[in-house]
Image 1 (cartoon, rainbow, N blue to C red):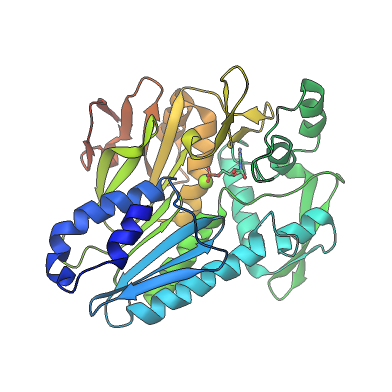
Image 2 (image 1 turned 135 degrees about the vertical axis):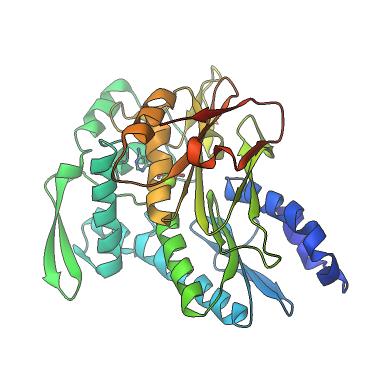
Length: 374
Ligand code: AMP
Ligand code: MG
C-alpha cells in the first residue's frame, strides 16, 4: 500500500506511456489494500492526489482507512473530488466511534432522529439480516466493543457471564423505526443497552454512492479501493477487464488469486484484517458470531463477494464469513433473493469459487481452485 503510493507519487514524466504495462501490477497491488492491508500514516481527513490527462486519483482517509479513488475521462477530477467529499459525509453520519454521528447519537440516546440516508442503511441492514438468518446483525456493537475492537487496541477476552449478559441486548427486534416524514425517521430502542454498528455495510453503501456520483459526472472508467471493498467501474481504457488480486489470508502481504471483472463491486471479509491473540496464541478476530457473542472461529479464512450492489456485497461478505464454508455454500445455492458470486478461502488453503465467476479466477500460488456448482 505505502509502496503503491510512493511509486505513484514519484511517477516519472514518461509514466503515461508505460501505463498499460504497469496497470496490472498496480491493480494487483491496489487489491491488497482492497482486501484489508491498509497503509496508514495519513491523518484524519488528509488526502493526496495526482492526475494526468487521462485520470485523476485521490487518497482520502476516512472510515479508519486510506481510501483510493481513481477515475478516467474528462470529468475525472470533479467526480473524484465529489466522491471524496461524499465519503467523508457518509462517515460523519454513520461512524460508530464518532459520538456526533447519527449512529453515535442513537447509541448514546442523545438523539433518536435519523436522516434519509442513515434510514436507508438501517433498512437495508434489516433486509440483509432477515435474508441471512441473522448472521448479519447491526445490533452486535455491545459485543464488538466488549472485545475491544472499537477502542483502538485495548483488546480483552470477556468472561462467559459478561458475554451472556451482553447477548441479551443483541437482536434486530430490539429497535423499531417510525416514519417522521421527509424521508426521516425516529429510532426507538426497547432495550436500554442495545446499540447499532453499521460498520459491516457502510463502505459498501459508500461504494454505491461513489458509483452513482461517477455516473452523474459521466465517468465510465474508475477504480476505487475502500479497505476490503473494491469498485471496478466499466472496463479499462484499453478495453480489457480489470484484474483484481485477492489477499492471501495466510500471507496477507501477498495475494493468492486474481479475478477478472468489469463493472462490479468486490468485497472481501477476512479474519486476517483485524484480530488480536490471547496469551495461549488463540486468534480473536473482529467479525462476531451473533449467536455466541464470540469472534468467528470456523473453517473460513476469507469470503469475497462479487456483485452489482456494493452495500449488499459488503453485508454478505460479513454474513457468509460468519456462516462457515458449508453453510455459505448452501446459502449461495439456495438463495433466490440475491444475485451474487463468491469466492471462499478455507482453512485447508482451498479456494472455492461459484460457477459464475470460477472461469474468471486464476490461482496465483499453489492453492487449489475448486468450483461450486448450483
Ligand atoms: P466487515 O469488515 O465488512 O466484514 O465488517 C466487520 C465489522 O462489522 C466489524 O469490525 C464490526 O464492527 C462489525 N461486525 C462484526 N460482526 C458482525 C456481524 N455478525 N454482523 C454485522 N456486523 C458485524
Ligand atoms: Mg462487510
